[in-house]
Image 1 (cartoon, rainbow, N blue to C red):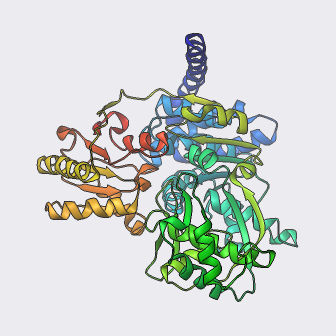
Image 2 (cartoon, rainbow, N blue to C red):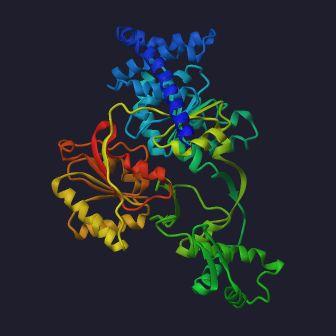
Image 3 (cartoon, helix red, strand yellow):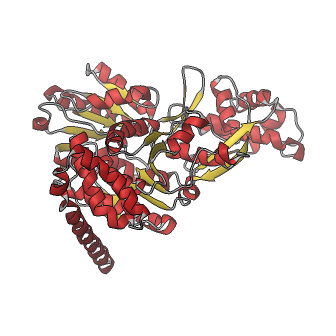
Length: 537
């Protein structure tokens, strides 16, 4: 075991040395680029395109192209990528995954490989986990790309096919993984080529790559159409039946989310629906409705798996991001069963027209790379499924965050009281606090307790995600208290207000462990970014 570990560490060290050598080459162009006027620097893009068409490879253009982006970023954004960011950019260009600690400026790191690969004219897709991040990054980084003479498009679900085509024809396209997937499926269903919106899939750079390529790898994207049906009544009858059951009438296994009637439940079903044999071939459809009603009532939890919108719609809550997934529905009639359970209008059933998993779709790109702060835990999957290596990049400044050990309490009530006490103590001295929860109901409960304790705070969960940007913007201010589901775990840069550094920086309190250790690490990583002090508990 010790030998294997030594080998891994030595491999990583060798890789870092190679990256440093190329990064120094990029840095050697810094003075020459700084001496150019704006017009001369902008003209470099056309020069690179011509050189590429004349046979120079992107690898050969890399040092100079990266240097152009660095100088451009300094002039347009007021940011100058550090050496570790150049190293991360090189790894991305080679189709691998740089593991960069949260807060090390992954968005700026991506600008260099995105620019370089856009020079080929074949298109670059920057994939984010939600449309809020797509719009934010496309707006902020788009300034730099446009200044350098490249076109930038944002592909959102609300856009028409013509607008989508325009976005995909840009040099750089920002989109979410689900939108690119659905566009791919729809393109495969059109009759005429001119109705397609995408170009051939060339290079994708995936932000939070572990979430998209590992956590959601097997998630099927399904395009479906309505089925004419008079089955709404059956959903309501099945729902009314399962609500009469007691715990003795069914067998349930929460971890695997499976449930089924046992003998007493079957007897009750036969009596309720006036049947001789529930499992007769003629009753196959009915058993399907009963199974869905059981899952809807006893496994799918309100405010954890889904929320009910003010418009009386059932919205799925993404377990990894805590956000609601607009326009997405549970398949095989489960969504309708939940609608019946919650007493909202039951929508028509649908049939699948086309489907693909994220894993199969992303393997169609000529080149695939991605960024993460916590990818080493899934190194084997990345290598075996996508042929991508995880390369840890050193931090620019030493990490100053203090990570406290876990605290265990005998009851939930005792735990939440301790959380409120800790928050109160920090609030009174002015230190900003971010309380991370797994479920919407936990964030609501802690919010209630904080109100009773007289502590002003903001709540960020699937119910009020539209206020996300505003809440995150203020979460690092003196005396700010924010409660969030794992929505605040990804792509959210909490900037510290005046005087907060002297108070110990942002403190992150996790109320419970997530299923994935990576999400715990991401929550921790909200504090102590870029060498700032911070705490996590």
